[in-house]
Image (cartoon, rainbow, N blue to C red; front, side, top):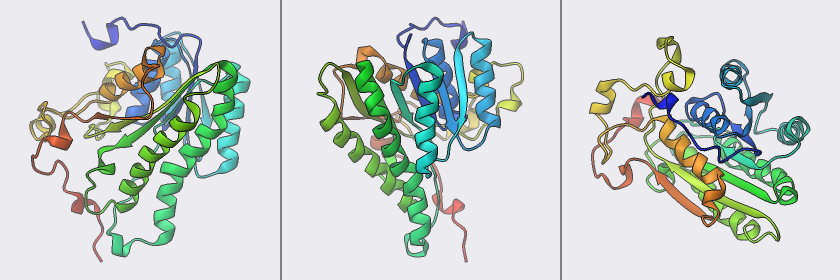
Length: 285
C-alpha cells in the first residue's frame, strides 16, 4: 500500500491553516497532509506556479485550498494574507511558518543589509503573521502556531550566520509567544517549533510524472541516502516533517507548547561527518 493510499485521521476538520512557502518541498507535503486531514489550506509565498500546483492537487483530492501571493518582508502583504484567509474561510486557526531565506556567506563578508533581509523573512515575518493571527485563534477558541526551525539554531554550519541566527531567534519566538498565549482564557492555543534536520530538497517532481505530487515530492536517490549522516541511516523526507506538523496542528497536541522538537533523524547527536560541504555554496572573491 503506497503512503498516498494510507488512511489518515481527519483531525483538522473544520480548521483553517496558513502554510507559508506552501509550494516548496516541506510546504507541499504539509499542505496536502493538512488537506487530507480535513483542513482548509491557504498557501502563501511570492510566486504562484509551484503553489498553484499544490492547490490543484488538493482540489483533485476534494479538499479546499487557495493561494495568496505574499512577501513575508512586507507588513501589508502579511496583513492582507490574514484578512484574505478569514474572508475566504471564515476564520484562521493554524499558522505554519515554513518559508525561509537561506543565504550562504562568510560572516566577515556579509553586509548588514543581507543579514537583515534573511531575518526579515525568517523571523520578523513569522512574528507578524503569528501576531496578526492570534486574535482570530482567540476568538475561535483554537489556535496552533508551528514554526519550522532548523538544527542550525543549535549546531550552525560555517557560512550561514544569518540563517542560523534567525532560526535561533525562531526558537526564542516560540517560547515567548507560548508564555503569553498558551493560557488564553477559553482558548486552546499552543506554539511550538519543529526543529528540522537534513530533509532532502534537491529533487524535481517533474521527474516522476506517474506519481501523485506529494509522492513525487518525497523521492530521494539511493546514493543520497547512502551518504546520510543521521542515526537512522537515511535523509529525511518532507513527509516526515509533515507528519509532525499535522500532529502539532491537531487537538491531540494540546499539552505540548513552548517546545522545540527535533525532526532530524538523530543528526544532532550522530557525530558523523558533514552532510553538506557548506563552502561549496559560498562564492569566493
